[in-house]
Image 1 (cartoon, rainbow, N blue to C red):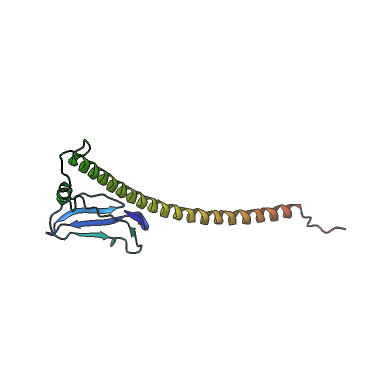
Image 2 (spheres, one colour; image 1 turned 90 degrees about the vertical axis):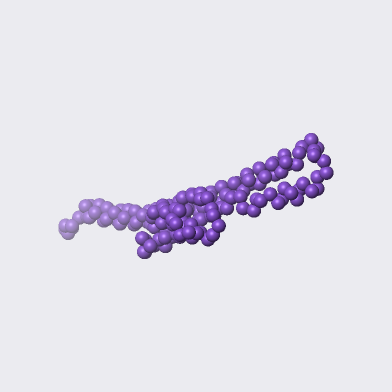
Length: 166
């Protein structure tokens, strides 16, 4: 997501470990991409060469789903349970609940991070608009003062007697 900079757009490239282009977005302000991964190093690039004058502020987040979930933790739990039931609940039910809570907390963190990025972009736009409104308000105030001075001068000149008194 482009947070700040002229046009709020940037090119994005994602290359696989084999060098194949997986994603190419041209002049986008934000995007979400899901890719099935394979072993190797991926390359991604945020390209701003089309905008040679302005710089950009970019927010990005890389989320790796299902990392490290190979089932070893479940085996560690099972060696401490002697019976098949634990307070009328099976170990699998408890593990399922814990994994569900973990997944929901991870999703909540991702959503909050994304919302913070939206808030930062909107704040930058708002501050830019604030400066622009203040500038034009000052210009308007200056014009009003000049116009009022000209009007006072014009009214005074209408009522001045240019003839000499005798």
